[in-house]
Picture 1 (cartoon, rainbow, N blue to C red):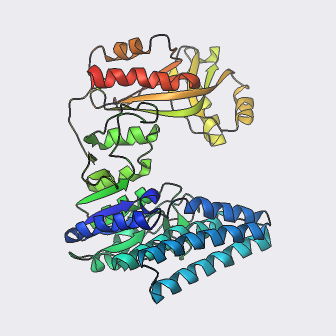
Picture 2: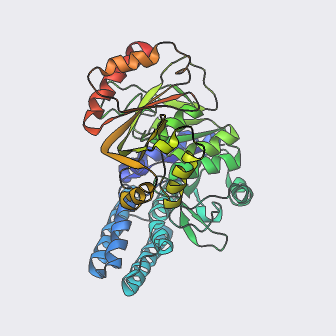
Picture 3: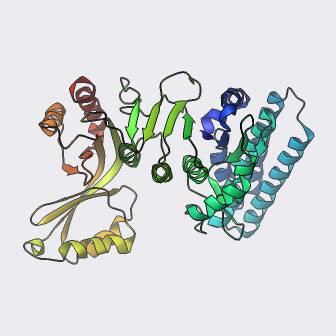
Length: 446
């Protein structure tokens, strides 16, 4: 069997759903499990409704609810030429009734807990899958009966052993050649049956978890690009689809800003050694990327990714000189403050590191000032050059730095896994730096 995952842009309206239905029909011989995101901007709409209710503006919350209801009913009516099946009509009415009750409860208490937000956010996927399953005649399965998580609402952690057991019970018996099973991405449930979500973008993660649990032949991620590209096409129009990626390369690219994949998507598939393909819903016969455990292409550089804005902190102290324990003390501060560090570069008496732009700097700097001085440089960007043979290609570093010319590089970090060379530049230089580096990638190093 295979897993077909379709994102929000792929099921944005009735026309998109018809396109997806054709792809599912073509895959029926492979016993597809179809994993859907919410339609279009539904999740954003649900968050807006919840925030309005929290603020006590029930009228605005109900207006959001009515707009969402109208969009879904319109899609259903167009798919069924105005003759919506009674069972689907009842299901939609029940789901919007549930949403109204949740929003009224939030408005009454003026409190929006993570648990309540997950319950509200889950409606998007539950609505889209009800409509689509009815249209294609597939079996609808509530993902919450399978995707077991802990109770960290908003960013729940899946429990893969439990998911394997539940998938064998609730999904495997329904799968078979000639029929489809439709379920939701992004949502799960605790052992006590409380609804959880995996975080924004978590539908890819769901697809990989289901694929791993079922021993799928392949997990297909259908989106609005022809695979993973060599760079962000909005910045570098010449960016090309990459035919094959290793899991390590894909994970690095995802972590450093590639928009196609949720970073956590990779891990379940890695462990189960299941290939993941990234395909364009509107161009099913077009190019795509296959991500597998190992790819030996011989490319020094596979792709470029960028993330920003970030903040660079340079921590200096003469206490570092020939002293043990300084780094442990330094990173203890970041750990205690819950601040994640991306890149690190060390010198004799200083350490430079990058953090996300929105971290609470004031208390962090106060803690560091006890034993060091700190320089802060904001509005920087990380550019990551990723490739399996990056470290073993002589002269490549010089080639990249030469290509940057007059663009100043403020920090360099080579990944411990030897496939990621990261550079920090001013945010305003990001686009030009990517364009210059991409010319190296496609012109010689690639």
